[in-house]
Image (cartoon, rainbow, N blue to C red; front, top):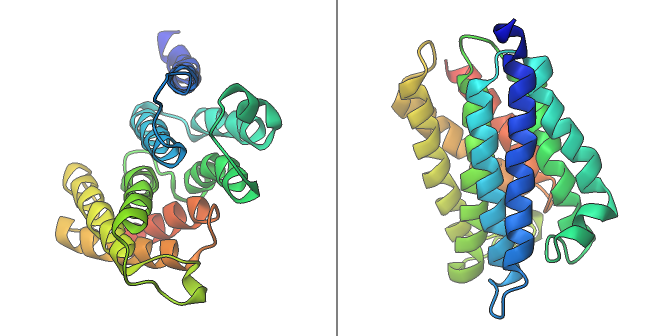
Length: 222
């Protein structure tokens, strides 16, 4: 009986943790000197990604694991979340990224979930959660060498930050999950794949392409 309730309970925990983070974010924006909206969004992105990564480890069933991000696809695509947490999206591009994040998680689960060997899924979500905001922060503050229009204003410095964070995360996943590629191979391959996906994808769409291509690279390299 308890085994049957494991995943439904995790659904409630997952939704509750994300809701708590959103409530804390809403309250933080009411302070006299809140974070800049850009930094606020990237911190929240990484925190929600960390929760998603933890839940991915704990779930047994892919079907139950998909429930929380599927719920947030609908919620994030609506106006209600943006009204509840001011600063989440200032324009259509940022609004697109809001629901693309859980969509990227759902698709990564659908294509790469494999009980007993979940390394590809974990690598993809880790890159989405940590490498993507790192690239945005470094590219915005330190980016001097901009690509052409094909890279949507992104920079060499941002891509390097993405590569380093994604490589470290993927190598850690490979070292912790048996049956995957060697850690060094996973780090280099997934870091390169993710950095290319992030540079080439339109803003917001990278929330889908990054986890999928990193997970695909991890699976290919195994």
